[in-house]
Image 1 (tube, rainbow, N blue to C red):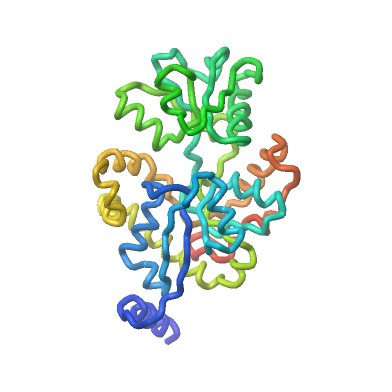
Image 2 (image 1 turned 120 degrees about the vertical axis):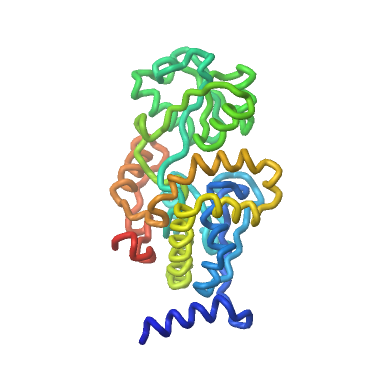
Length: 324
């Protein structure tokens, strides 16, 4: 009887306009892009409404990658998308931020080079220049990757080129850049018609970890635990639909973001390179991964202290399919 009552309530919440929906503000990590498809699927299909939620998906107003997490930490957003590295660094500064779920289950980053420059392996970066945009994490990540090929910091040059990484690569200012396999790699291959070489970070010395996680203030997580649980349930449902019907899911994303219609084919390529990495979301309860990543950041001096995993990662709000 209880199950019947719950189902009836969810149906009522989904179809009766007068029933109040609990507001939830979710700040994205960047402008809307195919990394966010399941969120827009949940919005357009009414999965959030069916859970009694009025979810507002908001792009950040500034483009410092740590800003969304800071908004969540301050309570100005209920949830935000960020990277586990950002979270671990912020948490190590005694900021009460915790990850409640994930969206993309593997890293997207790595080093991107043009084949025409004669780069085939990481060892070929000896004497080369690598462009990057984010301090202090990128120099640490790329140095760790290059160490696996026996290269030391004096063997190559790291150059901060701001956010103009692609122009720097294409004009020959640098020989490689820190990049995403589902964005810059595709842009070079499709728009410039050039062959690329991509070195995935998780294959070259960087611990495996999710690319994007949902984070929230620790106190807000306790206060809104039921809302967050419902949110993650809707995300899990949307991820399932994204796998079952990727074409429809992508169209729902474009419907929610009509300004991207003019470059729909390029966005579709980004999505095709991303969709497999939603597998398992929103589950983020592989605590061994979190421990290894935090140890790596500590050993590389990106953080001065380790956080308790139970504080860093909240797992008790995940849906049953996460195996808890």
